Image (cartoon, rainbow, N blue to C red):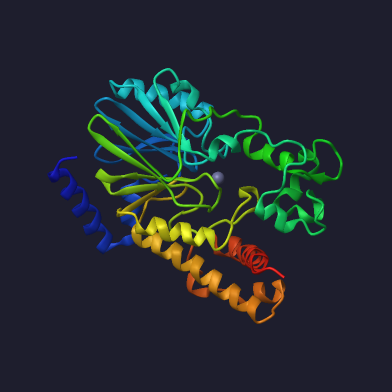
Length: 351
Ligand SMILES: [Zn+2]
């Protein structure tokens, strides 16, 4: 991006932002107003684009030597995107970066396999492999395993209870790690990464740079934050959604605390101004700080309740965090987040 286009981009964003913050980022993001097509490419700034598939967003970055794509999303979306990229640009996709292994973001990249190198955090590869019979439950699943038998009966299955019979493939009345893996990974195969990294990786192509950062366990144990330095923008999926309460759901399997909070704090330390999330609208660094405050307040309030000897029900009743009630999905997610936090933090404190 030239200096002129960058300053114009910033001035335009800030000017509208000061007038009407709600509208500014919707315009910036390109939005998805009623009547929008199911899929679209949204130009963000310079050579950086979002790719929307209904409520899922990936990204791509054009360079003169090839395109760097993040999260193909699905086989249908990737096939459509390949056609769009081939018609709009004169270079192939050279890299496919995965944010994490979940099958509503990662599949479909094989249409780019003849030209692209696939990159992910080192934990992603194992998450694509179906766990063996008897594999241990993930931390959040283990927390719900009240009778400690290594699998979840219907009364322990939380959000999996609705589809319990369909998921219980062996019909033994409980869900194993392998059976709970299936909805997130089964059915749609994701091409495994060719290259993995542990803490940080830099990709340079066509004179441009993209950074991959691992900030620890949050929604999963394999999450990559992608930083586009030229645009001063990061891409975050499921663990950091601007203006929305985090979903600390069982099907992520982790939601470890205080790990998730520490991960958000590490992201806050990165050098960026904007956030392009895998869901919802583009936000700013202030939205990241707001997520840090929510998670910090949650951990502090629930820890205080545990220290005071309160039961889970008493803590769920009393920890309302009304200062965060303006966030999207507060009513839907907050009480269950308190319950998850109670379980995680009391388990960490030990007997
Ligand atoms: Zn996910």
